[in-house]
Image 1 (tube, rainbow, N blue to C red):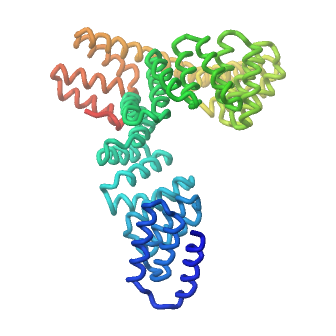
Image 2 (cartoon, one colour):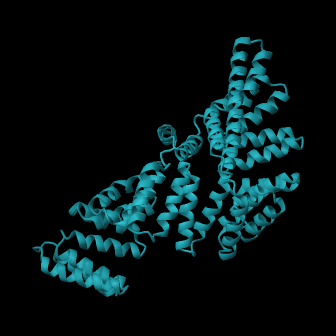
Image 3 (cartoon, rainbow, N blue to C red):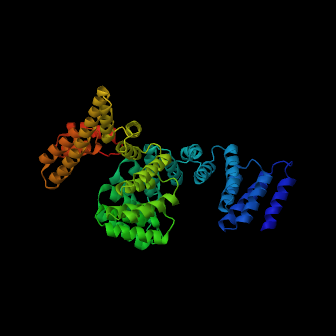
Length: 473
């Protein structure tokens, strides 16, 4: 095989100045495709190189050579061939697709977008091109575009499990938890070998608050795929949500027994141990997570909280500063550091930290309260009053949001009981209390439509769609 490859290079050198021979190129190309189908990759490479030597302008040969090189793990060489193919024939859907997909695999996400957009324009019925373009759009924060491309891919090939999986991830990021759950369920049903589908489904169920169902789903995922650490991690989270702290600790210990270097496992174990007031155990787990992942800001933050609770303020200050060094916009870390500095009699340094907390999170009512207290102590009455007023506004907004969530729950209960009028009243109250809550407007729209108030229902639906474009009428 190696001899054939070397022979192809020799042929290329010999015919470099010869006139193109398209007939010979087509023959070499046909032989290459046959060898490729037989998985004789080195021989196929030789045949494609011979085709290119016979006709250097044969874009299809460059494309197939790139594909074969990629199959052999020679990604950089493959990209060179795909680029040559695209330069020779910009209307080659295969070459554009292969270039875009390979760029995505090599983490050149931004560069992958243009060839993939050209691929779907050239061949609209190619599911994989839409799939990869959907992933690229999701990773570049174009969630609406991602959902559109992934739904198109699924429309072309409903059995494409990975497209359902990626659609679920895009919908979850977009805020459509119900849609995400449906997509993850479909992905898991289509390909039961995909541990990530079941694990993602469990995580979405946790987000929705369906802890019991999440636990069941994730236990099944762990049983089917004991080697998949993410499922164990998510199982621990679901167990914590359901109140089973001991079960969560067992899940996390099961994960780190298998993966001692799993920083997330150690960190979550620390959170569970802290809930049981096992501060020594939590401290050890957080320190291990901190050491294993130098980028994890949560580990030093939570360590700082434990150190503060166990009256080791100096060590806590160092831990919170470490968290801030890892994530300068970490509002909670700035707030906790400010709290300790205030207690230690350094109001100016404390005020600076509280202001950083409010800058990082403008909705942080407690930070504004602390700012107001320190400014009042400095007799800066006007500034203190403004800070207290902002804290009060944010606290009222938070209370309204909590009341709206209660009204939403009551509305769903009334709807389940057949009390449509009562449900509408509760949903209307939720929309009044929290006008930026898309689900409040949406549920009100559905209930109004059911009652026959179609015009008002349409108005509420349009309000919901402005806030959450994924909602379907």
